[in-house]
Length: 431
Image 1 (spheres, rainbow, N blue to C red):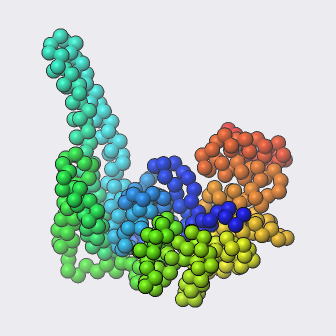
Image 2: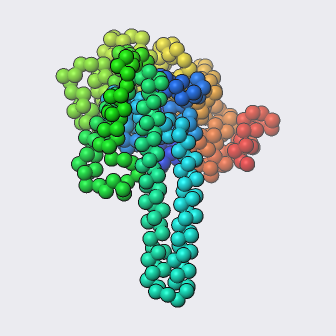
Image 3: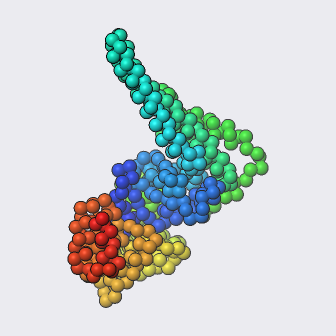
């Protein structure tokens, strides 16, 4: 049972985001939210409305939905080494939102579809008139290509506008505009050889070299007295390194972690990555030693205690795991639903008198802040009556298994008293 979830610290669940999965992690979400909050203010997004979502995908990618939901891919976070560069990526994506590009894209696609249909009608008409059949067929075949080229040109223009708006947003937020240069230089290293063989009219982004040259020119025009007063502090840069190390430790192989963070590297980030990697491959004693070393260096870091709680749980040391998670929660200055869920799971596993009741209360608090499938799963373990079936129904609904969700919702309604909250919620799942 110690391996029920080897990612208590790093909860991953499947959702339909480009066929990938989302990662819930308090440390990562808080660090990134803190870094991009000046951009949210500069973009006139109300305080607390910009939400960060981590997509478990190795692509070097990011996007914004609805103007307030930022999706960052782990491939981006593990490769971008500077918080300034990460801010530039988010600024670019917010530039799309501020420019209304999503709505414009939809309108443009509709216009191009109409245009394509008219061209296709012309082609069909030429064939119907009894003229040269090849002429009509040629027009028909080329209609989709015309629309495609038009859309590619349109998206290239949008990317240029988003770069400009993103740069202006960085300046308004008093951040370091050189983050844009860092991003494009890194992208150039990644794609330079490939882009040299690409027809620039056949892709939906401007060439990276063009984008880099453009932002350099814009930054060179800045007043000499410009001061990036909101640029990341040394402490934030250190925290960003820890988050990157955490992601690499969890998501990469132990061999790659050892290459990126060799034993000669004694930094906190390196110890963090190696401890997580050791835990992932089952070397729990080594992982524990590394984590305790981190705690001795930073005794007030809540996320090192969170990692220790996970390791102690997997070692079967439930009391020590509970102590570590409780210390983690004491040190967090805000609500931490992922950590509360992890502690609740350990409590259900330890199952001392009162543990399940406490787990239920912790799950309820966590669900008020951030509903997660795992929290419902743990809640189902903690309940010993029909409410467990309701919790399982909610769990399956969140992971997209409607058949199982309805099955457990029906079971819950058979055993629950009509009118109770769980009975009503089960009924909602059956609608």
